[in-house]
Length: 438
Image (cartoon, rainbow, N blue to C red):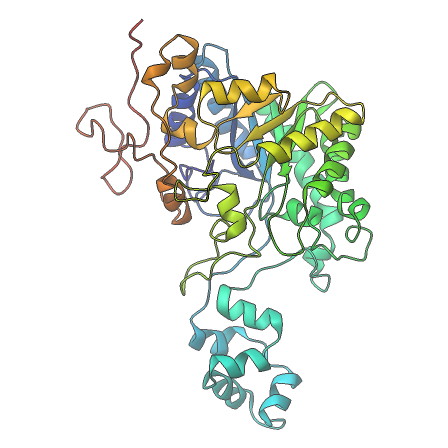
């Protein structure tokens, strides 16, 4: 979960350390540190691991978690790459500055010999219906949603060269994680990001890295091979990918079974399954905002709220993951499978393990609601657990790039001298301490 606790330089701040220490105090089996950028580029208050200068700060995070958990919690870090995405432009500025005028625009407007400024002014004066007929699909999309690079943009050298650049970026980031003392890395192959887009059925690249499943899984496997060569055979490396994309013409569970078997055969140490969360069906953002990949149906399936269908927000990923696990076992592999999504109770989690639908259970929103869940359940204080309401209050903060907190505790004991407040001064940044009754 990205909590927006870093700074513009992508560094480990005290707020980042406090965030993970608070989870570590609950002594979960493992914590996966938020998606951390592998490119040395500005990316807002997102953690980075793109240069050796980040190792010292990351090491201080590892040390703090180990101390807070009494050494009981393993710590992994999630490595992420993402392509360029721009905010939805003001239409006037789009036509004035950003749109590249083409012969097709001139021909459609009967302005073959007109000055460029005249063409821009003519386009800006048109209705949306007329514009949709004149602009290309990508130009229209850039106007309505903001320009976004795709892995199929082969005319862009930075995109066409991804198979050459990404293995090195991921492998050097993984080596930094090892030097910082993390117990392992999780390669982010899920949601709206670069590696997930290579796995997607919408990846139509014709250079051997798209098309059929064998081509789509090629780069993810090459990235893993580079990472494994970098960190060695005795270091934990797994990945997080999608059981289903939940988009039109996207990948389904059969694709995920193929990928899972390929990852297991390659020697990944664990496979963690999510679902949905794609840009393809995201709702239109307001002017000046960027598209958010958890606003369409695929985003709903990733983070469903209590306002839901008959199934509700609970365990929507369970059966797809069970199918993927069965496929991996049938292929002869014992690779641990992690399931997550709408899991909140001990009985629910324990049943997934005993029914062999998963080997590891991951909590996100429930752990945010109560970082002491694990210790409360382990010590017989389960009745004190604060259950997630699945209101997606936290998701709304994330969408606005605000420091993420939980409505169950973020207005509690605000006047305490030990309480650290969010930048808005209205919320605490970590849950209050819990004292066991016995």
